[in-house]
Length: 417
Ligand SMILES: Cc1ncc(COP(=O)(O)O)c(C=O)c1O
Image (cartoon, rainbow, N blue to C red):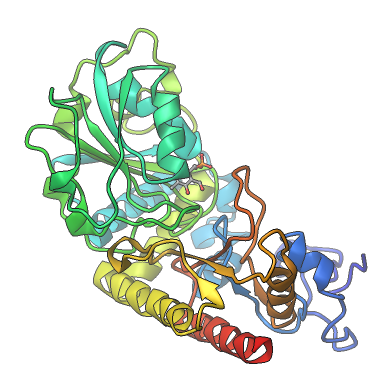
């Protein structure tokens, strides 16, 4: 495969990142497209134009964030060092960390009685950390509301450390009608947005049981909607979808839950929330560059109007695509018929195949999209997804990106008729 697009040149400190703009001699469509699109490649078909990246994550960061990072990459705040080179205990990094926490608190309107932890180990680390920190012993019970692949995986992991009761919500019903265990569990667990399956809880649909803390995996919808913290005990999210890149997980926990009896004797230190609290977040080396990047994205969100504006955009972006799907005469379909459950972050859809065992139309759709620099609609995942496509609409995806995809979907519909 040709290695055109971006040429590297010898780098000197003080110069830009050593990346040159693509040369004009590069033909606009230098790839055939088909192979790349079907293999889940994110490579631009036309590197002269910015891509519209609908990848489920890790994904693009807002371009103003990327620009700001690149401008101060070699010397942060005129200190002569890159953030990559700062010690996590230096006053300079502590300033970055304080700033990240303050902005997160302001943006998410996190009340006083909650503590923020910057953790390692991604969402999966917290799948184990939650029962280890919230269940005094292995015999304790926890309710897991299973709405898709990620809540199921969390339930499987938790069952190593506590007794898991699965709650299966009936589509279209109110959480108050679901069958939770009769004995109050140590906590109730939900994944507020199932990244793979496209099921989302609206903030007002978070189940509420008096005296039972609610744990929420917000990995793919954090900072996309306004929350009611009186319903939440613990919220956590891996960063690389809405607020950063891989290597950082944020945990926001109500203080009284941190005082609970945990499985501390056997809990690996890196998963023990108390270690982070007692060391002011410095129990081990915090992921410095990730915290810095997340602080930048949070500042972007705040400057753009905060969560009310992010929520408004999410509604607008997802509605554009669901409208195209609904009015496609059956060419496109989405698994969730009830709009209240439809994800505003990951719009899942299929392109109709005459032969259900074929993927001919899906492949033609993807190839055409790729030639327009629309990427990330089909990426590899360890979960079986068949012909399902996903348009992920995270923080960095603009309304014009979505309009471009919608207009392509309509054009594809016309040529398919
Ligand atoms: C909703 C959700 N939870 C958890 C995870 C797992 O996160 P990680 O890969 O950081 O362990 C993901 C990853 O995509 C996710 O989308």
